[in-house]
Image 1 (cartoon, one colour):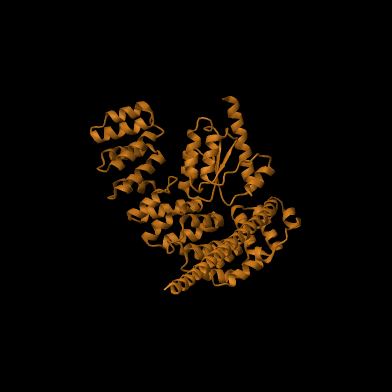
Image 2 (image 1 turned 90 degrees about the vertical axis):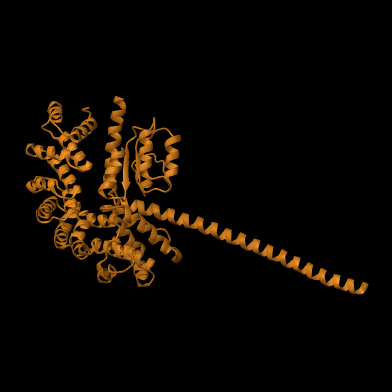
Length: 357
Length: 115
C-alpha cells in the first residue's frame, strides 16, 4: 500500500509541478508580450504625434503664404504615414477658404496627395471612397467628375452627400444643376451639409435651379425646399414667395413662404391670409403684417385680437405693439376701445413685453 | 492651424480642446481679450459656454467670436441671441477672421476704458 501511495503521490506532484511551471512561463511570456505591445504603441503614438506636428506647421504656414506653399521644405514622408497625411491635410483644408485653400491645394500637389486619393478611389471600401471624393472636391480635380456624379445616387448618405459637395466644389454651375433637383428626394442628407453646399456654390449660381426646382415640386417638397430659399438671391426669392403665396392654398407651403416675406410684394394676398382656415397661416400672416408695418393693416390686426387661437391673438398683439406709427398713447387708446376680454388680455401681455405695462 | 494663425498674428493663445477645459478656464483664469469659440465641442456645447461667459462676473464683457461649421440661420441667431459678438462660418478666410478679431478686440478695449 505504501509503494502505491508514494508512486501516486509522485505522479500527482510531478503533474502539479509541471503545471505550475507552465503557468509561470506563460505568465512571464504574456507579461513580456504586453510590455512589448505597450512599448510599440507608445513609440508609434509619439512618432505619429511628431509626424503630424511637423506637417501641421507646414500646412499652417502654407495656408497663410503662397510662397511657403510653393517653396518650403516638406518633412520626409514614409509610405505608412501617407494616409495620416491625407487625413490631416483634409482636416486643414476643410476649415479654410479663399487664398488659404488655394495655397493648401498647391502644397497637396507637392506632397503627392492627388495620387494618394486616386489610389483610395479605386478601393471598394465606402470609407476610402468618401476620403478620396472629398479630396477631389477640395483639389477641384475635374478628372473624376463623371465617377463622382455616379456616387451621388449612392444609398450611403455619407458617400452621396460628400459626392454632391465635391461636384459643387469642382464645377459649381454643373454641380448645382445636378444636385439641387435631388435635394427633396434625399431627405437623408443633413440639412446643415446641404446649406453649406449651396452657400459655397454662391447665390448667383443656386438661384435659378432652386427657383425652378421649387416651382415644379409638389407641395410636400416645396415646403421642405423653401427652408433653403434663404440662400438664393433676394430678388428671385421675393418673386418666388410672391408667386407661391398668390397661387397656393396649401397651409404648409403658405407658412413656409410667409416666413420668407421680406418686402411689400404680395401684401394684399397676405392680408387676406389672416382669414385662412389654418390657424398657423393666420399667425404667420399676422407676423408679416407687423413686419411690414402699414397703417392700412391695423384694422386687420385688430380684428385678429379675438381669434379663437391664442397664438394668432398673441402674434397680432405683438405686431400691433411693434407698429412704428403707434406711440404709447395710441396703443393705450387702442386697448381701451377693445370690448373682447381676450383682446384686452393679449394686448396687455404684449405691451408688457415691450415695457408698456 | 488656428493656434498657429493667432500666434503669428501676435496673440497669446490659451487653447481648450473641449468644452470642459474651456469651462475650467472660464472659472479659474482671469478674463481674456477675446474668446474664439466653436459650437460643437465635446462635453459642454459652445452655446452653454456663451451663457456661462455672459453670466460670469469677471468674464461677462469678454467679446465672443463664434467660429463654426453650423451655417443654418437658427444656429447663428441662437448664438448671437445668447450673447456672441460675431459669427464666422467654416470654411473661413484666415485674413478675414484676423480682421474681425482685431476690430472686436479694439472695440472691447475702447469700451473697457470707458467702463
